[in-house]
Image (cartoon, rainbow, N blue to C red; front, side):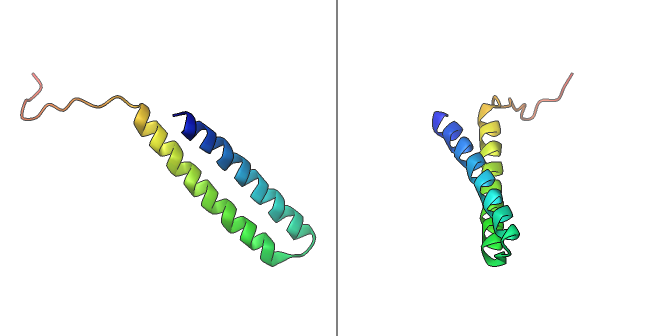
Length: 72
C-alpha cells in the first residue's frame, strides 16, 4: 500500500508539472509542446483515477453473498 501512496504523490506532481509546462508554453506561443504537455497530463490523470479506484476497491471488505436463500 505504501507503493501506491508514493505513486499517487508522483502522479499528482506529474499533473501539476504538465499543466505548468502547458501554461508556460501557451504564454510563449509554443503550441505544439503545450498540446503535448496537456495530452501527457490527461493520461496521468487517467492513471491516477485508475489507481484511486483500485485502492478504494482494495479497502472495501468482501461482501457476503446469500446464494439461494431468501430474506425472512
